[in-house]
Image (cartoon, rainbow, N blue to C red):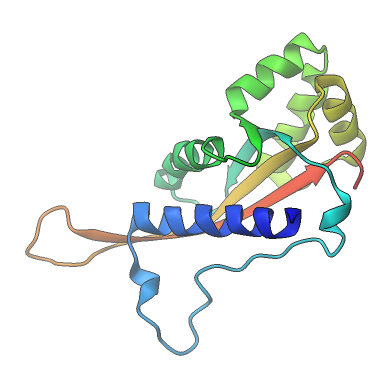
Length: 170
């Protein structure tokens, strides 16, 4: 049951981002990457994840406009009926109250600079805050094009998004 819920959540989020940013990818053509690709751990049913903190995101596109997608991702995740997602600002406040702000800061800096996380810091942060998992994501593609050259404000945006969830037990 959990496997399909996580996959459904990721698919719904991805489709929501496509609607927000345009649907250029809906036109099929040979050689184009799939619109939505979901990879789920084979043992996902063994995890009991309910409370998830959104840690941070990284923008590896080199385009500062791609940072605007973070508010849409946070809002989409927060609408989940299955999981309780805490936005990144609130997750930071919880880490501060739980006296693991240093671990939180190291994880944020590590993800934003190298797209890696320390297992030790993940476990310490989740244990201290009482969360079951944390989510990080990367905006790895941002392509914006004018669709109609004579129509002002009509554009098409393609967004590449990679999202990872880390639980304290694996």
